[in-house]
Amino acid sequence: MSDQQFSRRRFLGSLAAMAGSSAAPFAMNLAAMSNAAAADLTGYKALVCLFMVGGNDHYNTVLATDSTSWNNYQKLRYSVETDSIALAAGSVLPIAPNTPQAGRSFALHPQLGAMKTLFDSGRAAIVSNVGTLVQPTTLAQYKAGSVPLPPKLFSHNDQQSTWQSGRPEGSTFGWGGRMGDLIASGNANANFTCVSASGNAVFVAGKIVRQYQVNSAGAVPIRGLSGTLFGSTVNPLRAIVTGNSANALEQDHKALTNRAIGSQSALSAAMVPAGAGGVPEPSWYINPNNGVASVNPLAKQLQTVARVIAARGTLGLRRQVFYVTLPGCDTHDGQRSLQADNMAKLAHAMAYWDSIMGNLMGVNMRNQVTLFTASDFGRTLVSNGDGTDHGWGSHHFVVGGAVKGKNIYGTFPVVGVGHANDVGYGALLPTISVEQYGATLATWFGLSATEIADAFPNIVNYSLRNLGFMA
Image (cartoon, rainbow, N blue to C red):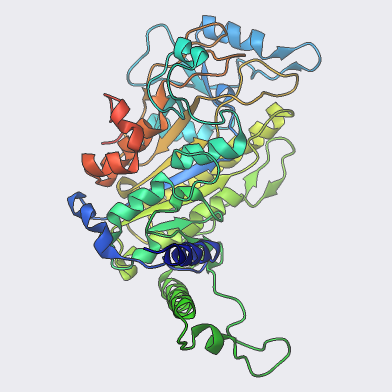
């Protein structure tokens, strides 16, 4: 391929990405996905990544409450200047994993009542101390730099990208998108394999599959194709952008635009409405800091995802990957009030999601749809005064009927400083990699071992490639 051809293809691929909200994949070549034949694509399954943007404070999300852990937690979360960001002992919500960890006891943030209900019912699990790694790493290796490490640790943009793609900021495809590449051939309409309800996200961008972006209104049309244009009663824009041309670049642009128009039309026609006769509206959530009721943006994103899932039969879909976000998790200050609000939103959205999946247009979809959380990184145990600073490893939730719930997977780390997983101020060196976390989900999703190694190149560095939290 000549440099000119390569540049042209890259340019058009970029156009497709920028058009995300309404653009179908560029040069979708299902033949290039032939290696997906090994995947098990029976039935319907979906994965939903809930990304907590900013680095959620895991120490106040899932807590160790045995006396040694609790005493260290209370001591290190105290600041002379601003008192304490530690939660009160009587406020946290105790949980009892099916598999005890010797000498340990656990609880959830007081606003996570709905998550406790899901955990106790067996439809939610906790995976402890997950983070970006290249290979299993000890504290001594980290300090010596004697093994490969994720680039630009503790940087928001880079670690968001590394969590979602295995590479720092600038990456063009993520592991959700790579899974999409491998299973899209099983979908009658591959354009809706990877869907973001929260703007452009590298997680759902594939090498071949392009993410399709939606919002609460549904499929987003290309603006200006109908009605008046600049006050004129004659609107030539559609004819211009979809007209024939002898120019090769304009031909590809025409094909791209036509696919975008067709995809928007197909999804709009198939997507189940919100509210009466469709996917019910979420109730308002209550801000625990001021008692004010308002719309929960996360619950609205999940409603949009449910509306797309409900169209799976009409669109001929067997596998889908979705992306939603909970912003505002960078709690350098105002820790207790800010995180309380975030956890209230998370719990409210999870209760709504579980209810909807339990009866989506008359069908129980809990066993077929799995939601999992992710975040830039965890945070430091030691208080910076009124909050916490950037960490590394963090605890995460996996929710769904196919989850082997009511358990904590992985050895829960020591709560303190100066231990074998402390890289400074209680920031955790991960003991479970994002690759292991993702590979476990991918196995349930139907990918073969070969395909998992394609989507997660670093998985070859781990002997444990399935953490066991999926049925």
